[in-house]
Every structure is written in structure tokens, then in C-alpha cells.
Amino acid sequence: MQSKIVAISVAKVRTFIPKGNQGALVSSAIHKLAVSTLENPAAQEIDQYGFKEDEQADRRVHGGVDKAIYAYPEENYSLWAEILQREVQHGTLFPLQFGLVGENLTTQGLTEETVFVADQWRIGEVLCQVTQFREPCFKLNLKMQYSGAAKAMLQSAKSGWYLKVLEGGSLRAGDQIQVIPGRRELSIAQQNRDFLNQRGQLDIEPDLY
Image (tube, rainbow, N blue to C red; front, side):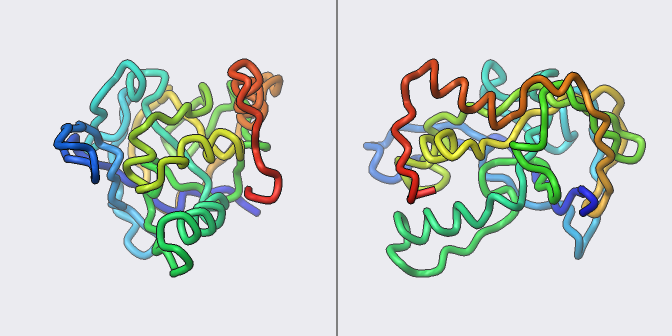
């Protein structure tokens, strides 16, 4: 199957009060909204710092040149549908929208097992390079309204990955992704597993994910 972009999502930083957080304020741009889909493939401009219409609240951990774009496979959405239906909706269907985990690019045809650090992606006039997996923070838990979301992301090795932009331009949903293999030494899935080994957090329940 040809790999492609199925959605582009962006957000501005906003401050909100999480449920049950005793009035503590949190600033984040994790609540992404799709601005380019297969039904409405609007072009979005991108440069070395990411999409022009996107922001990051804390560039120490998100954003910057090496984490300009966050990509996530549409193939992982079924995992979140199952988890959120069980943990948040208690059996009722949980509607999923693009930008679900705060990603900029929702992709099809690529997963953490097949994407490697240093791979390059040619997408039309844009050239990107895979830099690393995403290490989720507490803001994912707040976004998903589930305290175990960040842990589930890591333990399932379905973290998505960051891209740096080598050549800017415009992207739109439906654009084909041409993968230019890099060293092929470290997959994103293996990077997840190595991180968990270092942290001693391999207490995954095999039948859960």
C-alpha cells in the first residue's frame, strides 16, 4: 500500500483547567484540529519550525528544529478506540477525530515497526527526516481524559515519531510519502522498547494492547 498523509492538524496554544485539577492552569497546543483532510485537502505551509499555523507551548520538549512535525499512524487509532471505550466511555463508542494524540500528520501505510530514525520522507516539494519517537507527558492524559494514556502509548510502542524539515513548502492531505531509507539501525518501535527497558517499565499486560 502506498504511504500517504490522510490529515494535517494544527492548534494554537491555549490555557485550560483540567477536570478535577483544583483550578491549576495548563498551557498546551495538544488539542489539534484537522485543517486538511482527504475530503478537503487544503494546502498547509511548512518550514523548518513546522506548520505556519501550529504552535507548541513548551519548546524544550515539543517543537524546535528536530521536533518540528509530529506524525502518527491512522493504523493506531483502533488501539485508542478500544482503550477509550473501556476506560473513559465505559463501553460506549468513543468518537475519534484527526489530531487525536496531538499529531500534526496522520499517516497511512507507515508504522513504528517500519519507520526508522534517519529515514527521509519526500512529500512533493517537502523533504523531512525522522528524528525520534515521542515520549508523551501528562498532557496526553489530560487530552484523553485517561490517566493511563501516556503509559499505554509507550508500552504499546505506538508513540508516533518526530520529523525535522530539511526542505519546506506546502503539504496537503492525500500527498504520497516516498520513503528514502536511512541507516535502518533503529526503528521507532525499538526506540520505544529501549526507553522502557532503561526506565524498568515493561509491566505491559499482553492482552490489553
